[in-house]
Length: 270
Image (tube, rainbow, N blue to C red; front, top):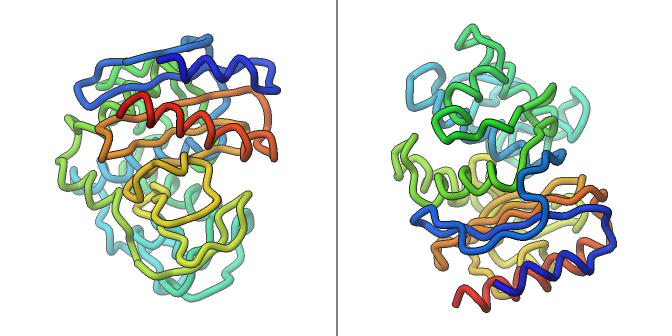
């Protein structure tokens, strides 16, 4: 896929990218795909998947209380607990507004750690990384934004999202469709979106515009981007996913070049 060569022209020090399909085949990769990069908020996808694993094994339940009064595990997963972005402060009642919250995701990790009596990073390793062969990935000190991984490891994770083996497909489908529909909120880096669709840890493209995915990605596309210049999206209509990691903080440069790359990837896949 020639589209991935676009990353060579980006104003970054290093970048790596890959495209993987439902059958687990890496259709294309470019750049240092075995080199570790900081993930920033792409970490939330890994934490979200670990939370689904903990629910399936019965360690926690979606309606277990967690966070502010009235908030549950499900509220934390969907950024609807009312917790502020990066401080332990309540800004709204549970389920009333989509408030993107690192605080909420760190609390989600702490809740799983307490329920399973194992450090959260080790839980994710055992539940997700080891079974998928993600040997170069760690969750770091923050379930919200502390992860480190490689493109090659994340293609394994993306293939799992496309064709789940660790979790029931219906569990993944429910987590990657809109939870608490109709809620407005701020998409970091892009401003208020009405609505700001989100699943259980997975941002959903919907009709958001502008957006970090391509203009030709389907509304069902889900994933996440990170403040350190990283992203992972899955487009169910294409049966494919794209991973891109860089070493430059997100900014106007990324908002400009990411959609161009993603549209080119979509065009080649089609």
